[in-house]
Amino acid sequence: MIRTFFALLVLAAPNLGWCTSALQDTACNQAIRAVAKFVAPEKHKHEYYCSLHKQSAGYFVFRVNSRYPAPEGARADWVGSNLVGYFAVNMANGKVYNWDIAEGRLGLMLPETTRAAFSNQD
Image (cartoon, rainbow, N blue to C red):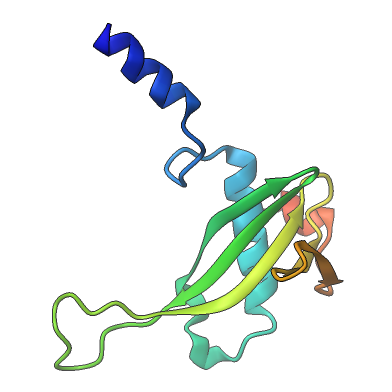
């Protein structure tokens, strides 16, 4: 009985970031590549990461952060992270858009994001 309940609980759980699809991973990488072109180099572009904010009809919406290395003398539990923004990636063509978090809708498209860039992973 307990095993059955636990199995149903696991199956009903939402995607918490540890269970991603290949398409979601590709979309995350696409968002990072697009964002890296428009953020100053001091933002540690090699250390961007994203987490799924939501999945809507035809789009993955990601929260993109940049990770900062610990300054000299920082405690072991120091966490350096900076919110870069929220971005939506079109699942069909890989185009990346700003996501208006307050309104919950697409904003402006980031230039130079195309299906070709979406299909050519680094």
